Amino acid sequence: MEIEDFKLKDGRIVNIKILTMDDYDADNNYEYVHDWLNKVNEFLALEFDKENLETNKTNLRFLMSKEGFIMIGGVYNGKIIATANLELNLNNKKMGHIGKFGISIHPDFHNQGLGTRLLQIIEQQAKKKGVKKIEAAYFLGNVSAEKLYVEKLKYQIEGRRKFGGKLKDGTYTDRVLIGKIIDDSMKEK
Ligand SMILES: CC(C)(COP(=O)(O)OP(=O)(O)OC[C@H]1O[C@@H](n2cnc3c(N)ncnc32)[C@H](O)[C@@H]1OP(=O)(O)O)[C@@H](O)C(=O)NCCC(=O)NCCS
Image (cartoon, rainbow, N blue to C red; front, top):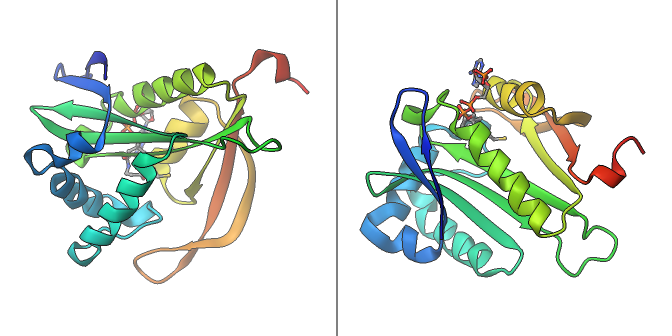
């Protein structure tokens, strides 16, 4: 489902849409995305080496089939160059008001305003689904994520999981927990 054409800072136009598994299956897009995710995976929770390709695809197919899972994509020249997902807590009375996001962008499209736009769209989608609070997490040291989430989009740092992640060099880093209330009636409480 088309959402909008978004103009990057350098003038390139990226088509932003809700992705289905058909979009990943078309034109080897799944393999393409897996390949660039492997290039930006220092701070991602999953591994994207070639040997993980099929397992990750099975997991993705499962997530995409879930009712409360929305995958937004940025498409450039027919290729998926960015993904941002929103996971809802459907049927959970105590945490149904919380949504969770994840985001990754192809390195050639960083610092172009795309991350900001994709997360604004994730917030709009979340509001439409009745989400009142959005949560996410990033590894301490992920400067791009911190700039985007905390400085630009005003997510609050809510805590830290000590040594919550391991980096490529074998050292451990904290996982920073962030959140943002998107329901006006809940603010300041
Ligand atoms: C994190 C990520 C999604 C950011 O997306 P992006 O499209 O580059 O972000 P934007 O261009 O919208 O940048 C948002 C703001 O942060 C700033 N910023 C982003 N990366 C920065 C960096 N490395 N250093 C300094 N500032 C940075 C931008 O300048 C911009 O500020 P401005 O609007 O005032 O100019 C992207 O870097 C990425 O995909 N990283 C790899 C995967 C990843 O780490 N995902 C997050 C896991 S938690």
